[in-house]
Every structure is written in C-alpha cells, then in structure tokens.
Length: 251
Image (tube, rainbow, N blue to C red; front, side, top):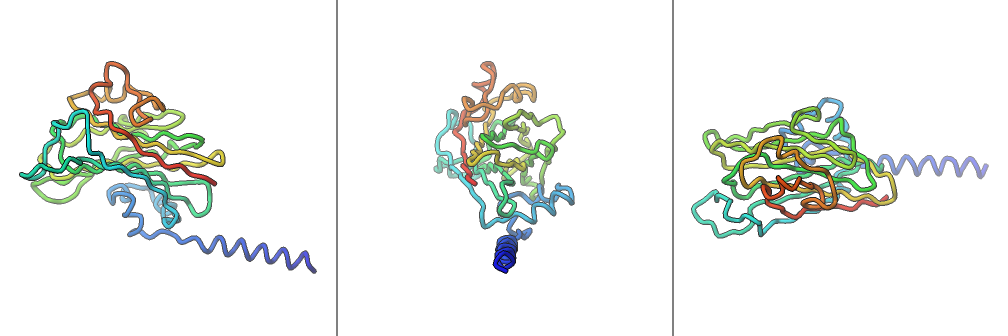
C-alpha cells in the first residue's frame, strides 16, 4: 500500500511541475523577437515557440558608449549629444523546465550609421549544442517615405549565414535607403550538454564598404571580437571591434 501511495504522490508531483509551466503568448514573444521574424517561422516552429516559459528568460545586455570609430555615426535628429548609438542583448528562454532554450541576439541602432555595408551578428556556445537547421535572422528597418516597419529575413540555408560547430554568424547588408530605424536580430535553438553552459553574442559593424566574402572571412572563436567573431587579419580593421554580451545557464 505504501508503494502505491508513493507512486501516486510522485505522479501528482510530476503533473504539478508540468502544468505549472506557463506557455508563452504571442504578445510575450514579441518582447523578445521581432514580429517579422515570428511571421517568417514555419507553423511547427511557431507552435514550439508558444511552449516557451518566458517567466524563466535569462538576458544580458550592454549599451555601448564608445567605439573605435565614433565619428562614423549619423544622428537621427539635429542634436547629437548622446554618445550611445547601439544596444545589443542576448536572451535565452527555456522550453519549460528542459535543458533546451530559444536563443536570441538582438541589436538595436540608436542612430543610423553613415556606412551601411555587411555587418555581422554571431553567437558562440560553450558546453552547448545548437540546431543549425533553424539558425536564422532578420533585419528590420523603417523607411522615412512610409514610416512602416519592414524586414529582410535571412534563412538557415541562405548565402549570408556561416555555421561552425560551436556557433554561427549572419552577414547583413544594412539597407541604404533613407531610413529612421534599424534593428538586426538572429536566433536559434540550443541545448545544454553539461551542468553549465555559456552563450556569447557579438555584433560587429563594418566601418567601410566590404563584400559579403570579406564579411564572412572569420571563424567562431573566443579570441575574436566580442569573444565570438575572429576576423582574418586583412578584414579585422574594417570592423568596429565592439565588446560582446553573454549569459551563463545552469541545470
């Protein structure tokens, strides 16, 4: 009899743990990812994202106040007194209580850069694996002519993505139209392989014109810019060498 009571007590505990996980709403997901990206998801992946437990989201962000090339930035308004010009944030949201996470790297420009060539957003994983089949990105921008947000989606099998065993990067050619807003975003699913995993994110801005091939002349490495993007010697000085962000996860 005691064994039966213990069994049903354990079953009840498991059910309580499972049902206590609050599924995400679309409105909650939009706090962490662009609408254009959500709209580009397959029905299967979107349904999976709705199971995310956003109450357990882990984020780290840093507002950049300095740059190797501060004069390169073009202000949105007439008064250019604020030194911060872009913000980068990395977020990991678990699928319930599992070791699987939806990972996002989000870079928002506070001022429109004068040079708009191939910028690179990248993620690197330590003691974690990632699903390269769904690694993707979005560049959002607002044309001054319409005032409406639009987006360019970068697919997992496109020419702009570069994948390695411990991470990936996407080269985005910033829109050259007359615009008032830019936001660059990449995402993927990742899973922990040990008791502790770390996610590093880096966004590097091209300060002069580079080709797609030049922008992809890098490896994913801890010795790279932001501890992620290790450009070749010939390309290194074409990027602003901003610091990166990271989150550390534990089981």
